[in-house]
Image (tube, rainbow, N blue to C red; front, side):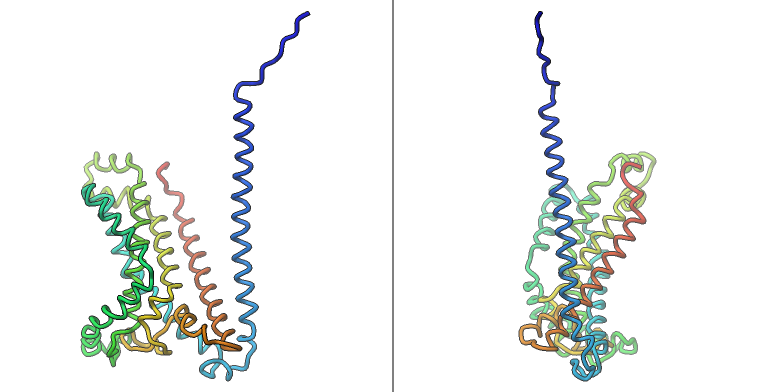
Length: 315
């Protein structure tokens, strides 16, 4: 009576190792996600605990002598104004540059221009700040004086114009130059992923290149453009050294061309090294406010992206 040995199923070994690899990768991804959430919670908890003495202190002991709200409100507005100016300038230019690289420029030009845009994103912020403080600010003194003389009836251009050019508008322009490569690089990659079949179908139906971009590329890239803009906004909200080098400290928020505006990040960077006691808790509380603003901006951005995620190259 002969016995036969059953051979193992073909591919059983690789399948088993593949399943093990999937489990390892799944566990590593889950652990990384849990670690990020834990670190984020720890940072938020630290900020809240360290900021509590500021919220319970006598308002007269807070910088300015009028309470924490009166202290934080001007620099919150300065932060939002600088970030808004940066996005208003950088978003249309960044999208236009990305569109030119992806759909209009010859391949050799597009490759070189793409390298330049990526290189701009790698320049340290202190370099941008030094450029803004030493060169750009001096070049803008004349335009600021003209705005004060001819458009001073508009509150945001009310004089007297800064004699140094170091204003919140200058800081916003510097931030725009800083976030421009981020928006352009990410948007370019999104444009390049637009379904080629949709583009060819639009052209085959007689659409011009711009009509094809408007009907096939931009709707596909809408969520990606919003993500790129939100990443640029996060950089603009949290930027420290470039703004600190351009701005001079002060509570004034009425005009874009006067000296004296400030942002939260620059306020912390300029004052934290010498801070102690309640002053240190004030600055940590300011950091908590910036943390909340950034978190709120990202939540709103995620909500906007989820509303438009149903459009993809597959439908």
